[in-house]
Image (cartoon, rainbow, N blue to C red; front, side):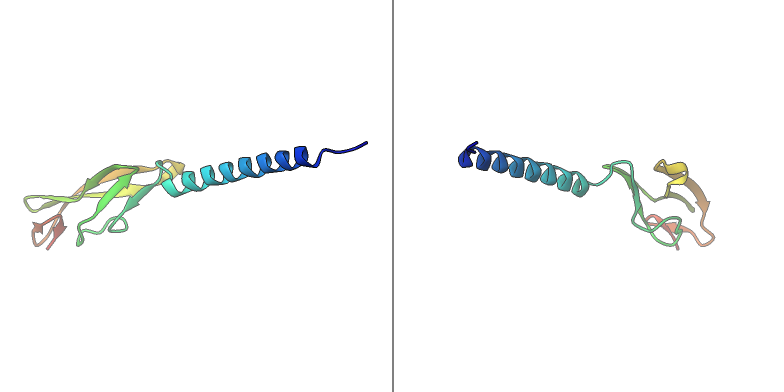
Length: 100
């Protein structure tokens, strides 16, 4: 039985191209990040540093309300990303999203 070398070469080329396409797809999926993960620029509850908490492209930033600070932080309990907010009374006042 005689094998067609050109036919089997094309099959291998198609298989390699499919594997490359799958690899590129996985790479970009991982590169884009998980939209269900939460990030916080001030690494959680930090009343003395202004921060921004994000889930995907949805972000909230700490801000002052008089002497009170609206503090946002990630809450990744139960495997579900969420953002908690807490109103904190700054003892020495609040300025630019952080306690003085």
